[in-house]
Length: 315
Image (cartoon, rainbow, N blue to C red; front, side, top):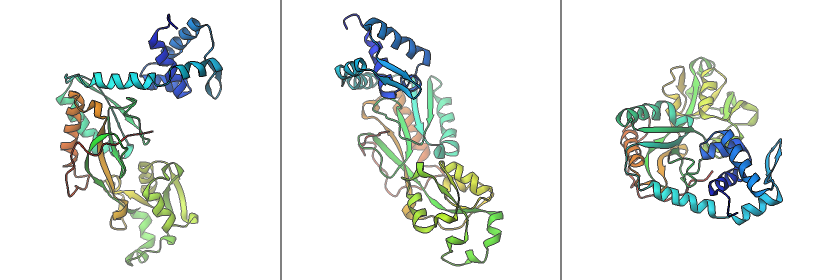
């Protein structure tokens, strides 16, 4: 492979990981045609087909498997070197890849990102709204603002507060149940419910629902906590909603007090190799100052250090 462009091998590894050109393009932050061109150039130079192009995606040929085995570990070492070199950048300019969830983005985060951008016009923010954890180790993101009681293990970060959860209903839906709701323990089987779907099975809210609400009472399942708010707002039933999202919605009424065991911590996280990058530190410090004083979050009793926890974010 002495005549091979090593950068072409990076494209090969990205396609091998993503099993598609579009996935590789997103990972490498380039367009689809660039990945196709670089992969084709590599195959022409090696005079071998590395992938079978199937309707289900790109599947490696035996030659591709051999090449991937020969390159095992090389991609990780290159990514580690890139992170360390990026850490030497002291400029308040460049790009920051930020990932967060739809539940945190609108009222909580977006106004502060607008303020940060006005203060630092040389920094471009690439925003990925994703309810799955992106990998900070693989530079899919530089900074994550995440609700989690168990942040991944080898990232560093700061806990900025917590969000609460309670049962909500629309005002019009509740008119049918005024007498029943005057008791301390409502009979939840009297209600239609909006519930998280299987994509949100990991949430504590989903476990609460299994314990308290029969399956036959569930009128709708939704794969988004923000979507659940909309369903409850439109009288589909009652729902276990984040107070962050439900409280500003004037059509909704809180049926119960927040349920403490459903509280979720909110973290600002980054990779240890990026903690000294000036633009990354500027953003994380700015968000920490704003979010710890936010009306949408419940303050923590004890502040946390930026040195803990050292945790890893995985997909």
